[in-house]
Amino acid sequence: AILAVTFPAGRERAQALGLWSSSFAVASVFGPLVGGPLIDNFSWRAVFLVNLPVGIIGLMMALAFVKESVAEKATRKFDWFGALTLGISLAALVLVLDRGLDWGWLSTKSLVSYLVTVGFAIIFYFIERHHEEPIVDFKFFHNEVFVGALVNSFLVFMGLMGSIFLVPIFAQLFLGYDATQTGYLFMPMAVMIMVASPIGGRFVGRVQPRFIIAVSTLIGALGMYLFVFLDPRASAWSLILPMMVMSTGLGLGMAERTNLVASSVPQNEVGIASSILALVRNIAGAFGISVFGTLLNNTIESNVWHIAQNSVVQSASPLIREQAVGLIILKAQVEGYAHVFVVAAGVLVLGAIAALFIRAGKDHIMGVEERTMFEE
Image (cartoon, rainbow, N blue to C red; front, top):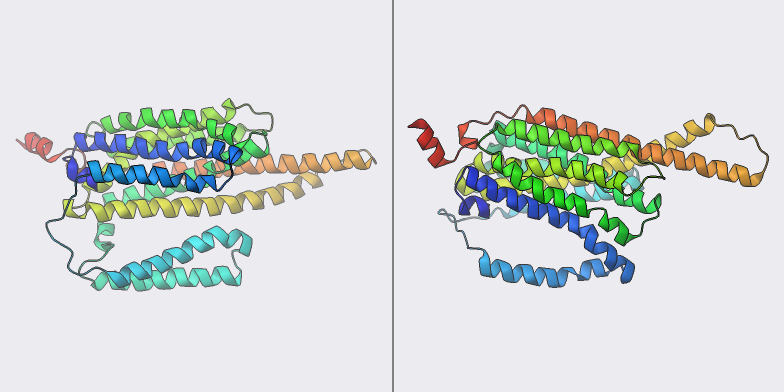
C-alpha cells in the first residue's frame, strides 16, 4: 500500500514492487540461512532472540524513511466486531491446520474447530455486509481481476509453502546435513529471486499480466517436479538446482501479482486489498503445510504396506531381516516425498491455468499518464 501511494501506477510502480518482492522473498530465504548456525551453535531459542535487534533496526528505519500516508477520508467508526469475529475464525482455522494431523482430522477437537471457523466466518460476512467501513470490503470479490490474482496466489503459495518445508527435513533426515549446512542450500535460491523479481517487474506494461503470471507459475511447477528425482544418495546440487528453477518462477511473477491487486481497486482502498492478498498467502501456506504433511504421512504408510507385501527376504538371520525392514521403510519414505512433490507441481500447474483466465484491461497494464498518451 505504501508503494502504491509513493509510486504512480504503471511501470514505475511495477518495478518498485519487483524490488520489494525480491527483498521480501530473500528475507524469507535468509531465515534458514541465519537460523541454522544459531541452532547449531546456541539453541533453538536464539532463533527468537535474534528478532530483538532486527526489530529495533526495522523500527528505526521505518521512523526515518517511511513517509506517513493518510487517506483523504478518515476512519469514523472502526469495525471492532468484524475484526473480532475474523480473528476468532482465523485462529480456529490455524489451530486445526496446525494440530489436525495429531488430533485426527475427524476428531472432536477438529470438528469443533471447523464449526468455530465456519460459524464466525458467516457472522463476519453479515457484519461486513452492513458496516459503513468494513475491514474487508466484499465488493472486491466482484472484481474478476482481483479474484483471479487471489486464486493464483493461493494455489502458488499452497504448493510452494506446502512442499518446500520438506526440503530441510529431507536434507537433515536422509542426507545427514546439520542445520547450518541446510541453510546454505537456500543461498542460490535467494540469489535467483533477487535476479528474477526486478526482471519480472520490467515485463509489466509490455506483456499481458496473465501470460507473465502463467509462465512464471509453470517455471515454478517445473522446479517443484525436479524434486521427484531425490534419493538418499543425492548431492547438494540435487536440491539446489530445483530450488533455483522454482525461485526463478516465483520471482518473475511476484511483482505482477501484487501490481494487479494494487491496480484493480481504487487508490484509497489499496491498503485493504493488499492486506487481503497477504492474508490469502498466509492461509494458503498453512493450508498447504497441513495438506501435504498429511499426504506425506498417509503415502508413507501406504507405501510400507505395498512394498512389504511385494518383498521377499530369503534369510532367517534376524540382523538381515531387521535391515530389510529398514530398507522397506526408507524406500517408502523416499517415494512418499516424491509423491508430495508431484502433487505440489500439479497444484502449481492449476495455478498457471487459473492465471490464464485473468482478463486485465489497459488500466491494469499502463499507468494514468501512459493511458492518457495512448488515448491521445
